[in-house]
Image 1 (cartoon, rainbow, N blue to C red):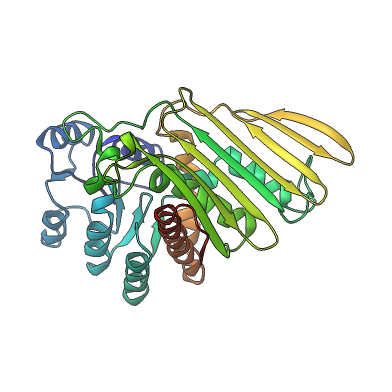
Image 2: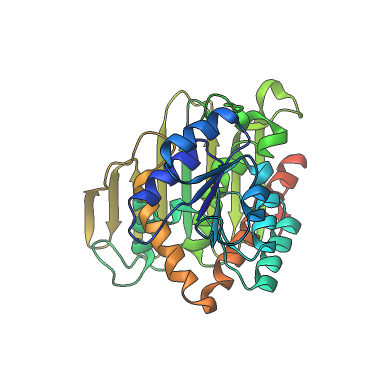
Length: 341
């Protein structure tokens, strides 16, 4: 495996892979000399290069083989790195968002299909304790407080007092750069919320509406707060996101015909006709890495990799997520008018 991008995510991934007996990182790619030095210190005996092309161009037998590329660079580099790896016949794990635009998402998933390789999104919130709690709540007969029935409504409220920072030495505030990030909080945290909603409702919404606020009201600035509604016809999901709330907290709720479940940080409260119940989730890390979610995400990748019949599902999630986020930005540009999917 090669890790492309050795910032915060790449460093965490390298540590995560080191803890797994069936994974080995043999190369790290980063354009920053300082980050390459850090990678060389963290990966003794491994290859360190400035570009993925250098790794892909090495002659067979020059080092341990690369069969998977894990793309951990800022979003502007996701598509070119993914495209190069797939074209070279390698499987790809890619950080979110795999693509910022639906057309690009379709191009990449079609390239993966044509090359017979798996393009897998690093949608780590999909294996988080919060997502498991919400999924179990609407799944029939799967534990305490389960059996709410099909979701009728959901609410995701993600509040931050600042954007997550990158590493020193390479644009630590890249999330506020339109050129590197491709968008603001809607593309960043919003991507997580969108694929979580897709998994919870089991399908794409029919319409999307959204409003955003930008620093200083400047249209050239990235969005730092957003409100959007995903309308599924017989249900909806409301999402509120902020980098300027003055606090760090996470709130999720889902309601079905038989009751509701709410998650406030680590507290879960369920209400059904049988009464009210409470439990606690494993406390998540307070940083942006969520290393504790890495192993289950990687196991999901290994499971899907082993059965090509499953490869269409992550491809569909990549495309649907990009379609929804792109529609949300179109809605925001139209002052919140609902945009059909």
